Amino acid sequence: MGKISIDTDLCIGCGVCVDICPEMFAMDGGDGKAVVKDNAACTGGCCKEAADSCPTEAIIIA
Ligand code: SF4
Image 1 (tube, rainbow, N blue to C red):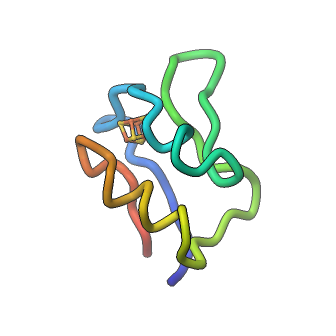
Image 2: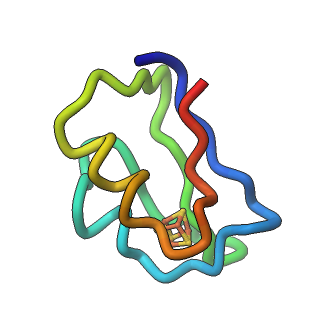
């Protein structure tokens, strides 16, 4: 698996990804949307689970 990003147009700021995988995701203080932490690459584990659990499919694994 590869680089991970979040489509901020789709993200509704529910926090599910942060709950599932806090080492990969954080909530942006500004607009209430999730962000990917620096240099994040999805290597399976909770990263994939978070992407699968996002209600708006805003998490993109390239
Ligand atoms: S799970 Fe999806 S919609 Fe919810 S905060 Fe994360 S990226 Fe945004």
